[in-house]
Image 1 (spheres, helix red, strand yellow):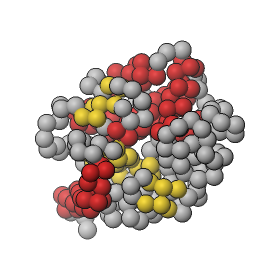
Image 2 (cartoon, helix red, strand yellow):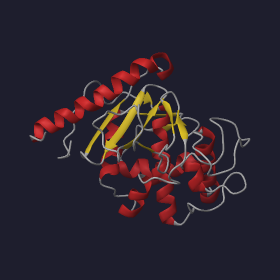
Image 3 (cartoon, one colour):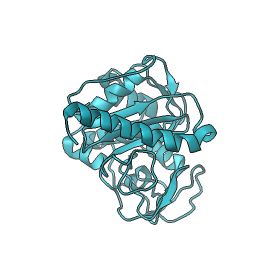
Amino acid sequence: MPDGNVATIGDTARPYRIASVAKMLVGWTMLVAVEEGTVRLDQPAGQEGCTLRHLLAHTGGYAFSGRVPIAAPGLRRNYSNTGIELAAQLLADAAGMPYADYQYEAVLEPLGMTATVVHGSPAHQVSSTVDDLVRFVHELRSPTLISRESALAYRSVQFPGLPGLVPGVGSYPDCQWGLATEIRGTKDPHWTGRRNSPGTFGHFGGSGTLLWVDTGAHVACLALTDRSFDEWSAEALVCWPGLADAVLDEVATTEGTP
């Protein structure tokens, strides 16, 4: 809620596989590392001509999975688990410690996210709880681990004007992404609601999870499930926008705004 209140339904302490929502944690962890001087966003990473910024913005030229490049960097959004994994490995090598340990010390432990665990790939093999992710949402809305300038870069379009695909949702001539987080922009159709502002940023995951933060309404929404997105993608792309619009309608009614 805009006033910082939290409304929940269900068992908020139950751990779920959050799938690609985990990428948002990677982006935040990278910005901590940037501010500490461990890595630089524009340092070389991956194939020739690719940088850490390219990898985090899904324009490094890698496929969904597989380390053989399929395109030159910076041409389009090729949504890629590999790109995020390469970014995480770059940080691990620079820090001289496993990526999961760095993320825990840099982000999870300071925020009290002790139930969040990296089980394999930091791009999608992570479990967490609603309680932990609410703590992360508070950090996204009012950063304590990074500067406001870095937080703005996180949710600002990197390499604007690139075409690309949001898996399972659609292909767009301007597929906007920040640093490991999607930006709604003018995408239509989309998995967020029609009432969501263009600056809304977030992610959904293949395990039926979602997290978005609407910077215009100052509202966030997250949901964790254990039902594969592939099993109910058509239904999800009706339910999720409806949920988003209902949340924003409820907030508007509570505040007495039209």
